[in-house]
Amino acid sequence: MSEKCIVAGVKLKSGKNDFEYEMEELKELVKASGGTVECTVTQERDNYSSALYFGKGKAEEIKILADELGATLLVVNDELSGSQINNLEKATDIRVIDRTILILDIFALRAKTKESQLQVELAQLKYTIPRLKGKGIEMSRLGGGIGTRGPGEKKLETDRRHIEQQVYELEKQLKKTVSVREVNRKTRLKNNTPIISVIGYTNAGKSTLINALINLYGVEKEKTMYVFDQVFATLTAENRKLVFPGNIEAIITDTVGFISKLPTKLVESFKSTLEEINYSDLIIHLIDITNENVAIQKLTTDNVLKEIKVADIPILEVYNKIDKTDYDYSDADGLYISAKTGKNFEKFTEAILYHLYGELKTYDIICSYADYEKITLLENKTEVISRSYEDDGVHVKISTRIGIYKRYFQENIDDEDLQDDF
Image (tube, rainbow, N blue to C red):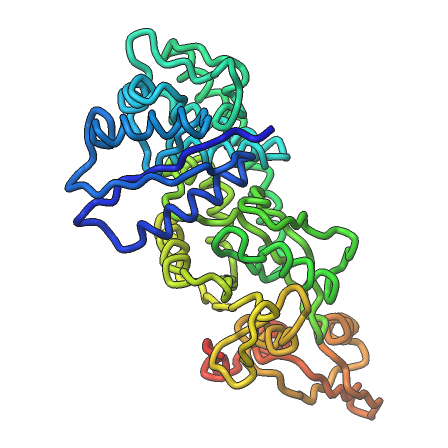
């Protein structure tokens, strides 16, 4: 049986205009964590109350609503201090969690790999430390429920030094996983295999998109990504090898989805995973065209990219889920696709290859009969159109991208032939 919840938030009179969107998103997060939203409570104020977050009258109103609805949990839209949580619980007689605890709870629920479990636990512990007071707050609620997953189930010790030691141990374990990833990354870079990172707001369809590319170009087509219509379905950076038309190899990697007010401690804990984006040759920013808050979602993603200091890497904006709309995007500027049905994937694939290696052209190359290495390179890295055996060597006509030709067959090609836009 799901927990009955009240979601609540304070709208600052001087605040941004995305409060309503944040509240709708908060309700979706509650559902993703297994709760049922019984009602929504909002209050407009000049500033947050340092004691209760809400005004005293609003806290009393929430208490009455909780009694009437049988709600057992209050979920607040902003990050609260330990004293605010304690005061609100006393004023409302129900358990209180904030947006940060809720998101951490969902991450704990979704974390399947050892690395992602360590990252979530580290974020939860870092959230706990500044909220320890006197004997401390007991982060493990013996009653269970939303906001108690992960290390909360282990009844955390309230001694600050003990938790700080746990943080130290977790960070040490995570450094080992980073070392393994660095070895794999160096291998990819050494092999000159371009890396494509797929980023975007949570539930934009990133894993569906990657699976569609795997089905078309994957080396191991059985190794698809986990897909489910829910927030934060993917928490790890998983890599898959693709071979595009023209024998062009690439590594495509999935990333954790972004969300508004993504907890700072969570970004810090996942930073080693997110920073994989910095080693990309191309970033695909996938956007859910069906969401009415596209502008807010794009801004959120851009802010996270700034926070992890993404370098000067080309970003290809791709609008997904056109199968769910009635609009005809055939003449629209930009890339509009359906990862689910594969619509417009030919144009999408061309855009990827164009950003990586430039325009597709044909070239005539003459190889000496003794130059087996060059002939093998032509066969492995390009599409051979024709070949003939003449007195002066093997005449080969190939079709390949300007960047491939420059990298492997002619170092002095004019850089102006390589264009960045599509």
